[in-house]
Amino acid sequence: MQALVDEVGEVAQKVSAKNEEVKQLEDDLAAQQAKADDLAAQAQAAAQAADAARGAVGSQQAAINGLAQSRYRGAHRSAATTALESANPQEAIERLGYLSALSRDAHRELSTMTQASQDADTAHAKAVETADAARAEQTRLEEQRARVVKEKEALEAQQRDIEARVDALNEEQRAQWEAQFGGVTREIDPELLARLAESGVGGKAVAAALTKQGAPYGWGATGPDRFDCSGLMVWAYAQEGKSIPRTSQAQLAGGTPVPMDQLEPGDVIGYYPGVTHVGMYIGDGQVVHASTYGVPVQVVPVDSMPVQGAVRF
Image 1: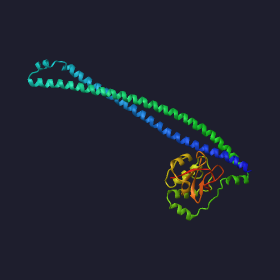
Image 2: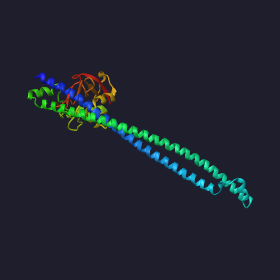
Image 3: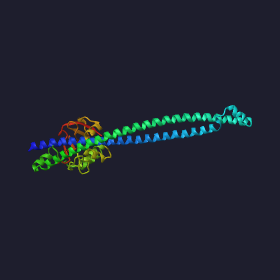
Image 4: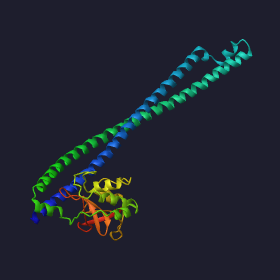
C-alpha cells in the first residue's frame, strides 16, 4: 500500500513541478506580448514621424516654388538694370534690398528643405527597422505561445491521470496519501494570530495562510478557495497588500536569501531540485503549504521535503 502511495506521490511531484514550469512560461509569454505591443506602438509612432517629415519636405518645396516665382517676376534682372529702371534712388535701394532678401530666403529655404529631406529619410528608415523588429517579435511570440499550449495540453492530461489515481484510493490509502508529508491541521490560536498580525508583513502573511488550512489543492490556483503551492504564497501576501512573484522558482529568486537557522514567520522556503515547490515558515520548525492534488493545505515539518533555500519578502 505504501508503495502505491509512493509511486503516485513521485508522479504527482513531477506533475506539480511541470505545472510550475508552465506557469512560468505563461508569465514569460505575457511579458513578451507586452514587448511586442510596445514595439508595434513604436513602429506606428515611427511611421507617423516619417509622414510628418515628408510633410515638412512638401512645405519647404512649396516655399521654394514661391520664391522661384518671385524671382521669375523680377529677381532675374541684374542689380544695374534694377537700379536704372527705378524712379528714384530710394526705389532703387528698396528693389535691391528685396532682391537680396529673396536670395537669402531661397538659400535658407533650400537648406531647410535639405534637412527636412534627410529627416524624412531617417524617420522612414527607423519606421521600417522598428516594424521589422515588431514583426519578428510577434513571430517569436506566436512560436512561444504554440509551445505553451502544447506543454499545457500534455500537463493537463497528466493532471487528469493523477486525479483519477488519487480518487481511486480507498479510505486507508487516502489517509496515507494526505499524511505523506507528516501534515496536520493546526488549531488556529487567536493569540498566535494576534501576535503574528503585529509582527510585520511576514507574520500577517502567515496568519492569512493559516486560515486556509484544509482548503483543497488546485493546479495553478491562487485562491481564495483552492491553491497550489506558490498560489498560497501569492494569496497570503496579497492579503497584506504585497505582491510577490507567481511561480515557486521566481519566488525563491525574487526575495532576499535567508539562512535556514535564521528563519522568521513569513519566509518562503523552496523545496526539491529546481525549486519546484514552496511553503511558508510559520515558526517552531514548521511550514504551511499546499502540496499536491488530494492533500489539503497543511502544516508540516520544515524538513519534511528536500530544502533548496529560503527567502524573505
